[in-house]
Length: 121
Image 1 (cartoon, rainbow, N blue to C red):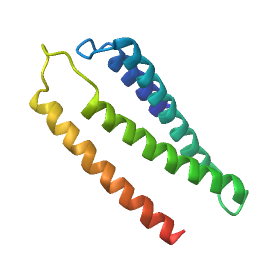
Image 2: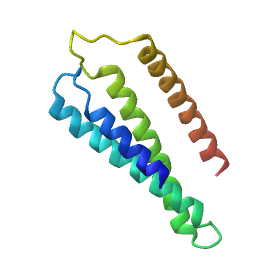
Image 3: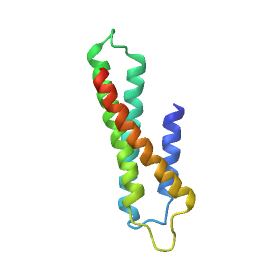
Image 4: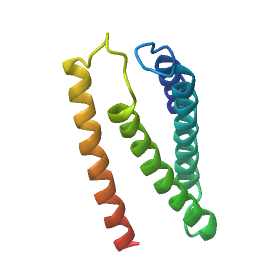
C-alpha cells in the first residue's frame, strides 16, 4: 500500500508542474504513466504471493507483465524527462540534470537485468 500511495503523491506533484508546454497533454501522459506504474506494482504483488509451484501460469503471466510494465514505465519516464518541451523561462537545474542521468543509467541496467533474467528463466 505505501508504494501505491507514493505513486499517487508523485503523480500529484508532477501534475502541478507549470514549466512544461502543453500542460493538458502532459497531464494525460503522466496519468497514463502512473497507471502503468500501478500495473507494475500489482504484477509484483502477484509474483510475491503466488509461487510458481502453486499456480504456474499466473506466476508466469505476472512475471511477464511486471517486466513489460517496469520497462515501459521507466522508458516513458525517461522520454518525458528528455523530450517533453519546457517553457523558456525555467531551465533545468543541476539536480534535475543529475536525476535524468541517473534514470538513464538505471534504465540501461534494468534492460541488462531483464535479458539476464530471461536467459536464466
